[in-house]
Image (cartoon, rainbow, N blue to C red):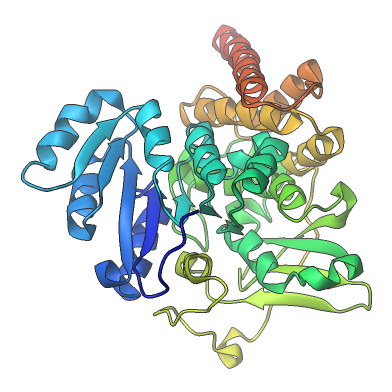
Length: 401
């Protein structure tokens, strides 16, 4: 990475700038000095080209990229009269990620974020990771690229960011376990019979966080926690048996690390993504942020309970993937994405998502062999094909009955 003066604006790129993570990242940047403190190299979005153009113009970005090649003309028109370059498509995303940024927010949802994030890591940028698929599907490959580039990996998910804050690297030998907290979503107390009739609207109503429909449903099924278990194993180089999950409905303790002397260090805070984003953006400094301060007297209580992996089998599937290694994470994630879309479209029931993912994992096994980007994409593609076949079969049987 090019050496820069400490007084020069920090060069940053934000991939997925029109989503929740991206918008919050720009809000934090604005709060911390905006264009005087940061130089925006690249911003990217997909469908909302109007917002992407407004962001790029407001922050003086060098380039704005839409992942949808069909929206290039609309983006270029929205940027008319500005100095911002317009680009579109997967290749343009990778080219933008290869630009000379010091810090890159990896906020593109899904497998679409893998190639540009790997490109930024390979070039040497610090990676603020808000994309689960990079580590879930390609953890081994991703770490290789980070090591090659020499940048730092800074987790942005609230749970992993919390662990990062209390994970004492010089005491790694004394760390016994990582404890991921989970809100339990809207169905933590619902019995299995009632969960079978859950609708997408019901599953999207998260009690603590304001998120998109897919992320909210992943939380309701605890597939988000399943992915976070795999991600934590890769992020912190832990064994599968050292990763635990505990239900914590208040979402005040974001995660914990347990040490061999019996101490458990926890990071607490109001549920606000700007805390994790700000910590990653200015690491190792802690910036002053306009987030809610905890009032412990008003909190009154913090509750905990063990997760029920009978009602939430996604957690068992995560453990299977962690223990199998190889391309199991890519298989789990690809099948989960198809099952999630099928549930949203009304093709399958809420509880059938895990059934489909488990069946795909049984058919494909670990995948074996070296983990290359080509192998990851192939495992993902194959898992999706099989998952779609399973969805179609269930839909056909449902129509027949």
